[in-house]
Length: 160
Image 1 (cartoon, one colour):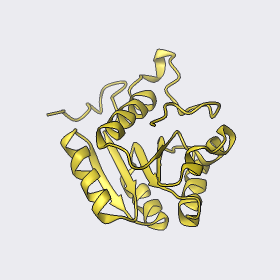
Image 2 (cartoon, one colour):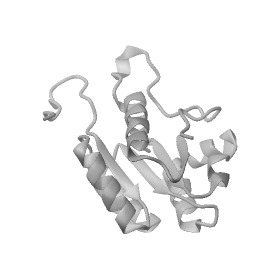
Image 3 (cartoon, rainbow, N blue to C red):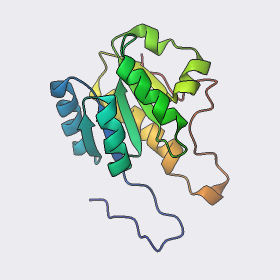
Image 4 (cartoon, helix red, strand yellow):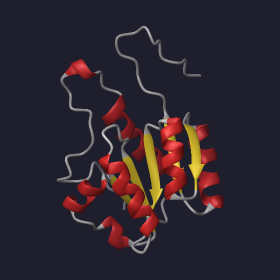
């Protein structure tokens, strides 16, 4: 069991929290169970509007968003998230390969760190989340390592 970070410590690792924004309750529930088995604290919502409210309340360290080319709600959510200074890394799931092939500039403008086409194995998603989390949250600020989001030139990693 992981103990909570010591608030008195000069730098403490972030909580392993993730918010899943996905319309398919069966999929998101199954993913939630899988991630919780791997030590994540998971919250779920089905819409972008609910996701913004949940984000303000929960302060997740990672965001998983279902997005398809015709999904206006998902794009509006990503646009809003990208504008925020404290945004978490974002992993986008999609049945539409067009989303995965977005240009680096568009990914950067939407704050997308990783885009993954479904179907995808939960084990693959877990590895991607670990990489995103470690890159953004596991490096002390004074270490000199840039642990912030991807530059937008290339995605952090890509699942096939």
